[in-house]
Image (cartoon, rainbow, N blue to C red; front, top):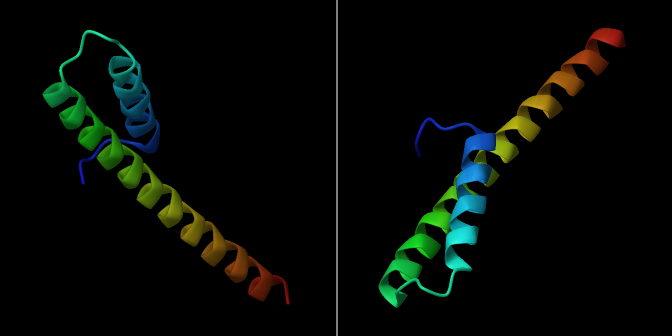
Length: 67
């Protein structure tokens, strides 16, 4: 996984989607772009899941501190 942020990965995926919508792109290029797009989405999803896990830990810690 690269060091790009969640927002950068989403922006990359959107850019790839726009390129894929063009009709003048070769099949070979389409497959490569699709592969890159899926990779960006999967990595963004991993970043999001990690953030959710951190938030859950923080919330649980906060609840214990309040008790």
